[in-house]
Image (cartoon, rainbow, N blue to C red; front, side, top):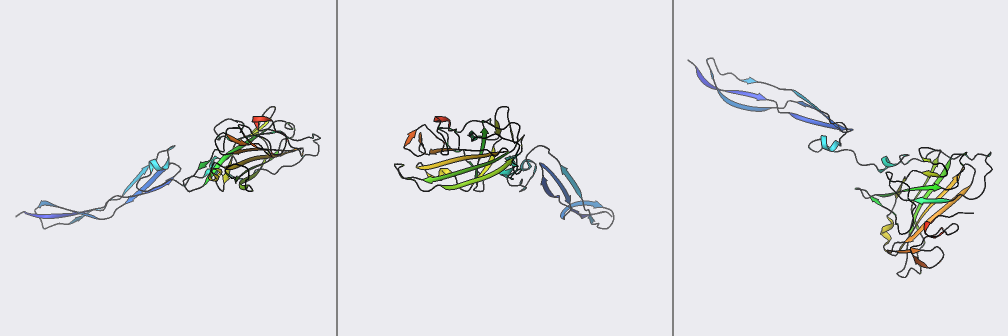
Amino acid sequence: MSSRRPVVLTLAPLALALACSGGSATGSATAGATTVTSDATDASDATTTTATTTATATATAAGTEASTTCADGCRPPPFDPCDEDPLHCGDGTPLDVDPACDLAGPLEIALSNTDPDAGFSVFEAPQVVDVHYGFQGGQHTFLALRVLNPALDYPGLEVTFEVAAAGCDALFSECDAPVTLAKRTLGLDGPPLYAGDDAFTTVPFLILLEQSPHDFGESGLVQVTGTVKDACGRVGAHTYEYLQSEGVFAEPGGDSTTGTTGDTTGDTTGDTGTGTTG
């Protein structure tokens, strides 16, 4: 005589573990235990059947963000701003001065504050420092410079970028001593770090800021300085200086004016902000 007895089937749930790296996701799954009960007709005694299932799943999505291929909490690694720097925030190659070079005189310098994917644009009025803010509270900018009278036959530059700021009173008649917000010195030995026919133009380098110059408010005085030494031992420097109040810029050593900049280390040349040092 046949009888209807419940048949117990134990299945393994899919436990998928994802590991993300470089825009791909790979997962392997192994059983757990889930019980499903159903009616069945069996001419023999009651039977309990247990089944265990093991599955392996693999998914790859090359060239996409890890966050789009990872599921349920998998996250890409934190963004590193140094990935946008051509030296990955390193110091480059130390400069060797060549005694065979007999060129003399100061180097003429121009500054630029543009992103890596933008061309060289002279940093001048009414520009202010372009600050990039990170998700974890950091901030940085990009600076480049151009040597207008380079020693074309003697490659090699030592470049220093510096950003400073100071608080001033409401009338800009007195300012505090400038506070250094960033300083970075690099040794550049040629392309792709800089190139040019009649001038040496560096690529933009990442400058990590300890504090944003915008924190000093509208009455803040901001100074951005580039200093260069070449393989002939020649030196040049240029400072672009401005007050953060809209349309007001500081003439070094003089009264505040509108729409002008100057060179704190040499001759003032109007609104280009380029000059020479002695």
